[in-house]
Structure formats: structure tokens, C-alpha cells
Length: 202
Image 1 (tube, one colour):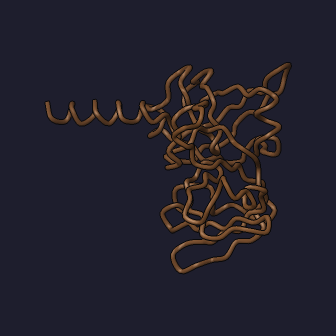
Image 2 (cartoon, helix red, strand yellow; image 1 turned 90 degrees about the vertical axis):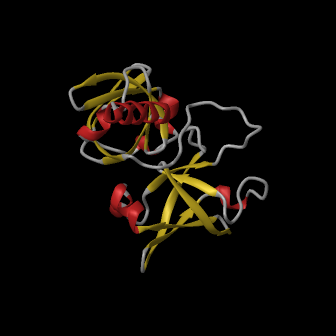
Image 3 (cartoon, rainbow, N blue to C red; image 1 turned 135 degrees about the vertical axis):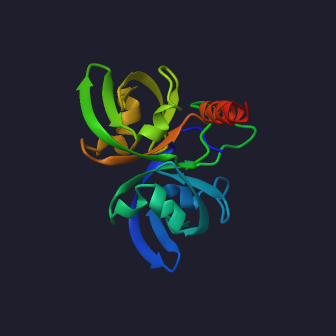
């Protein structure tokens, strides 16, 4: 489980194709924190929950299967890309952000990016299938970043970022037209699924 509060950005150093997916090597100081990350731990990489398979020397390695590649932006990643990183939340830690599972629901496309004053407004076009789980003033995770929905205009969801969020995540380099991983609010998904099943039984 994660919170959507990115700890740091890492740089993708290597992509090794495997029979059923890919193995990624990421440069990050998290690899050398003996109390904070170990082999077998979960690590959110641009919002995707992945398992650490090797670490040390400033590098963390994770693996992803074909299902992850098909449902996320990972297939578009290239060497040198910046990635949002967050370790799984400890049970005795402080919970900020919102509940983020690291299971991506789909991919959105940045349609607008407007900076002004103390915030940057981001417009993201979502697949029709995800809109039912998005609520105005509710939570949404974009590339693993916990954000609040400020408006919904048709298939476009708008969120506002303060300077700290943009400067300390991959959003400092993303541009209009690029795609982002989307995880809608966990509670909203369960409510939609419950009501859908209940309607089907009535």
C-alpha cells in the first residue's frame, strides 16, 4: 500500500527484455538505505507496484510482466527517463495523500498544462471506462502522485499542483501529449463495483 506522496525521482539506467516482461535498473539513493528497502519489498515506480529483485551501489532493480506492460506506460519508457519512486507505507507511519494500491487502472493523456501563481493546472484525458470512478474534489493518482480533482469537463479531468509537487516529481519534465498512469480512488472503485453488482442481482 502507498500514499501517493513521492519520496524521490530516480533515473532509468537499463531495460532488459525478458521472456515474460522486463527487468529495470533505476538509479536512486533508496538502494543504499539499509532500513528502508530490501529485496522482496514493494516499490511504486510511476505508480506501478513492483517487486525489488536486486539493490545496491545506488541502483534498484525491479521486474514487470506482460500484464503490467499492457496496462501502463512502461512500454514507452526509455533509458534516462525520470521515474517517481515511493516505498510501501509502514503501518506505524504517518498517512498523507490517499490510499494508493499501485494497481494501475488505465492510461491518460496530458491535454493541458497551465502554470500560474502558486499552482499548475493539469488536464488529463481519461478512458471512458474510468470516468465513473472519478469524483470532483476526490482523489486520483497520476504516475503515482496523489492529487485532488479540481474539475471534470467531459472526458478531461483537471488537477492542480503546488510548485513543490511539480518540482519534486516527474511532472517537472512532462509535456502536453505525454501519457500518464492512472489509478482512480480505491474507495470509489469499490462503491461503483458494489452498486453495479447489486443492480445486476436486482
